[in-house]
Amino acid sequence: MQSKTYLRAELLLLFVLIPLSFFWNYYIWLKVGLGVVGFVYVLILMKKAAIFNLKLPNRESLIPFFKEIALKLIGIAIITSFYVSYVSPDKLFDVLLQKPLLWLVILFGYSLLSVWPQEVLYRTFFFNRYEALVVNKWGLIFLNALVFSFAHLFLKNILVLALTFVGGLLFAYTYYTKRSTLLVSIEHAIYGNWLFTVGMGEILAFPA
Image (cartoon, rainbow, N blue to C red):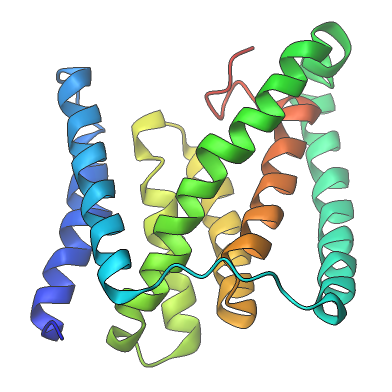
């Protein structure tokens, strides 16, 4: 069992200092190396602690979950559609209409190669490793959303930081209440893929 001092230092290094370093320009392979080493370190800790939980949720819990997601998605869709149509009307559903094959590739690639690792790291690992450091439920959720937003600092875009903070709040709450990597990954993939579909992919570093 690690001391709280060690855990705080580890959290600071993995979720603040390393992401902060990506904000500055230096060799890309060094950045990739730092990211890979950090993620492998996390996977080793998760294996030792048997944190991996790939159990499927029971069927009864899926119906209210998807109803909740549908309601959130409607709100997100309305707000983002108005935003894109006002700021960049030429981007509205552009990739879906002009490059449907790329759209499909991005949807699957993003869900598997981006969403899943993010949720393993920022929800499954984070909550199992650091939950004891924050007594208050909402403080823990806020902290998780903050470091999740901080991970996108390298994109140097205020809107991205705001979106990922709000998304982080939603995902953190879902994981806190459901304790399911699968369900929070589904939610993350749905919202992220919608943002790409509606025309916000460029600011989120998707290929256009």
